[in-house]
Amino acid sequence: MVEQLKKKLSNPDSLVSLFLGIAVVAVIGVMIFNYIKERKAPDVTQSETKTEQNATGSAASASHTVIAGETLWSIAASTIGSGYNWVDIRDANKLTSPDKIEVGQKLLIPQVAKREPGQINAASVEVKRPADGKYTVAAGDSLWNISVAVYGTGFRWTEIAKANNLSNPNLIFRGNVLTLP
Image 1: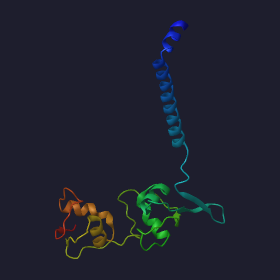
Image 2: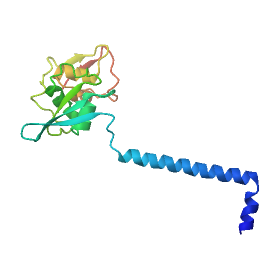
Image 3: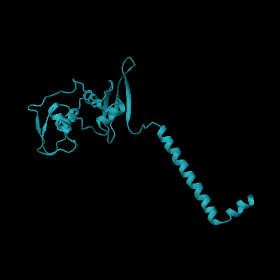
Image 4: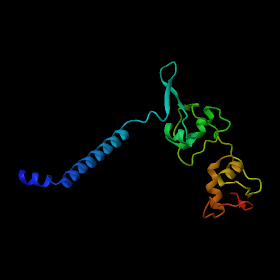
């Protein structure tokens, strides 16, 4: 049997194939090891969240340092567990323009209950009513922006889409007159 193995390996093509096969197996093994290692290790380089202690030693709130590409929604989703809590972060930091957060900015993350989809805190959103029940679409409008302008919250955009039987809510045109629920 050893003689047969020597005979097969005496061919240079067989040796090259053997070494290439070993190299492929080794590379795949290293890739699998690194993938598993990255999945287990917490990603502390992406964002920094610290818990601050009050005088009694209990956790009062946390702070978060904004990194590139984050929004209040994504920060709320990762720190509180629901993107719908972005309004709580906005209010806790007294942000006048929640779209304008900067990389490196430290935000206070309040300890609040996780909001579920469809929940609106009446204290944080002023609910307005449409004047005449109609809205004429202007250039650059979206259902979210219209909902914010008319109702004071963007979360009612789905109601506008349903009231107007819009098959594609992302496709509205300047000059269209929408019925507001």
